[in-house]
Image (cartoon, rainbow, N blue to C red; front, side, top):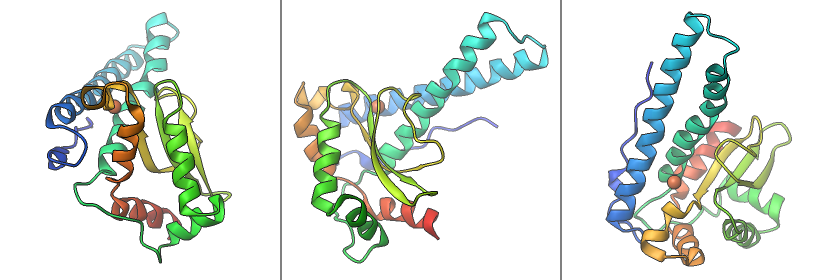
Length: 197
Ligand SMILES: [Fe+2]
């Protein structure tokens, strides 16, 4: 079964990201979906033909995680953005968990923004570890390295330059501020309740 690119066009018109930037970003995302499907198909063919142990088999398998995470992280990222201005529900279990882990919402927000402003390209993810029931802000340098195994992404921030340079030049901080005010907390709280219930 092939993966299908999801449609995030409902975000066009949102605060802080231009239509041009969003459309380019959607195209980039769709490229990951296409490439994942292509790699998956080639690898299935190689497996059927017994082409194991070749340099092609090895390198394509190494690339698979890059394409998959590039696809999935963009879905989490676009999926946690909204046109509506929202804040986290004061009574939510997620807020309680954030306060337990970070001390306060403000402390989490400060840490998440500071990590998003770190030099280098990548992602920042608020991860939930279901075994220890802990939350972590995690820096992902490239799609395929640095993930916490078995943890669930709750908030995903894209800090690759393509995510902001069209609208903000190199002012990544302003982009981060805008994104933090455009987070869809309904979706994020739902992600959390899906794993704790
Ligand atoms: Fe991106």
